[in-house]
Image (tube, helix red, strand yellow):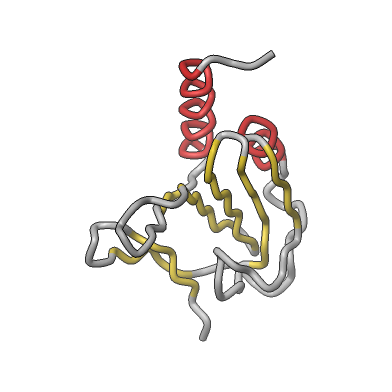
Length: 127
């Protein structure tokens, strides 16, 4: 059964609200013309970073990676990954325990830095 556009909007809003309530911060990567290409939520906690990338309601990727990963949008090391529709992927991500897949490399650290276009991105401390 296919859901209506209104129901998909409610599902998307509910999923995003659940992520925000869990502490996710969002960035909006743009193409050369300035168009938003995805909505990316990032949450650094303990020794890991969780990332969810929404390109469409049926095209979502979520990952958990070590906290010292240099590029959270294209990580070299992935501890957990899921892809598919929004409801399932966000549900799986939020059901992960905070300590699942924890790594012993120390806590993730960094900060959110605003850019010229009014967006922010999380910079991981590497030294």
